[in-house]
Length: 129
Image (cartoon, rainbow, N blue to C red):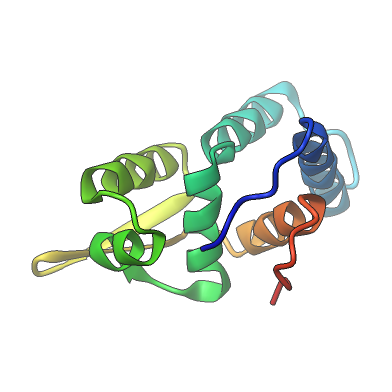
């Protein structure tokens, strides 16, 4: 996956701004406190380099198994499963079991925009698709 952008923490602030702008564009009003709490939980679950990498792998409607994700990221399978579990529990990912495999995918298409926003805000060389 390459190295992750290193910075002074400003990237996360830009991501929060992107998320809030997307939310306001969708609803045209300030979301109620319960929606803001859900959004904060989602942002907390995403706020880890490996989880951002996982979301990048799954954007655009892709479905992948733990093994595929683990091999692409070059991390232990237990660690991959841990990160996938957090993202699934917080409502970012969905999963579907098929025989021995569990396929993971973004739960909502709007999350593609969040992933693209994170990529743009971190000033990486990645080109959002």
